[in-house]
Length: 111
Figure 1 (cartoon, rainbow, N blue to C red):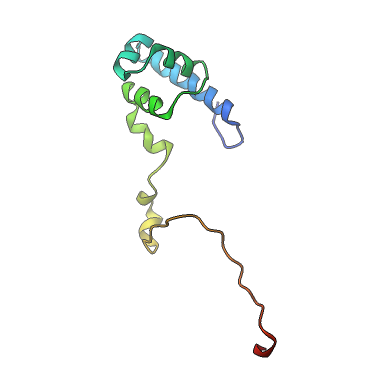
Figure 2 (cartoon, rainbow, N blue to C red):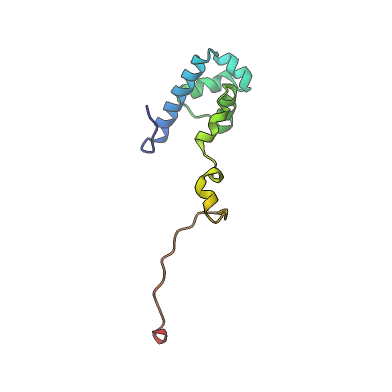
């Protein structure tokens, strides 16, 4: 199933857990072996593979243990690596702001 923005969080979590479990099985790694390598509990892996929530830190550990650490770039791409970043003003934005409407209002004596 393709993950898209219309899915709710629980559906996305379930799909990720199914993909993770299949990747672990295809790698011929048991939960116990993965738990030892990632330094997490077997219960954490079982919770994740059944579609329950675990910490992001544990997800990172599990992905690294399955040699999926190079996939983090797909998860949240580096904004500074975009071609458009090098064309723009190279000003690093500190926060998002709403665009403001230009106020056409004037004092009576300024007209």
